[in-house]
Length: 239
Image (cartoon, rainbow, N blue to C red):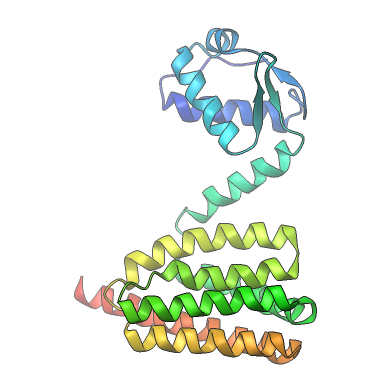
């Protein structure tokens, strides 16, 4: 049974209630859900509120609409709900250090797998990312997200869909926090070192040296943790 909502943030409350209906299997994958008018009556909110909530859920691939037929629960709704909840969890007070520790568990193994699987096209993609990184440093417009392109490219080579999605969630939040913290702390020398290490990792993947590539990635992330710790300490001293 759908419960009427109180006056708290209605948009978020509608989303939460719909998610609960799906998680509790009252609305199952591929089921058609009630229309805006019916939902607004049941939840006792405006149609505009319902419309915005449905739009957000569709963006998260939890529901989908078919022109002339209505709105339906996606086949992968439960998986996408967990992905959305994970993204929310990552935004709740996680430190940069904790996020990097998680990457430290995942990425070396993905790098090992990439060194076993990489083909010529994969290596070319890694080389292009490194080239772009060097060009942006020369122009003075380096963006930390380019570094994550390299890491995500390695993850994609591993072809482990679940870990790729998990890593995407971590990296999205980590990059947002890192940009805020390191805007005054990441030196040109740090960037050059980062790109040099990326190149070394790429070479080990290219030469099919999985154990060496795995260890190099582990050391690379440990160094990154050290830079973030230094930046965090400087921030606390100057604040």
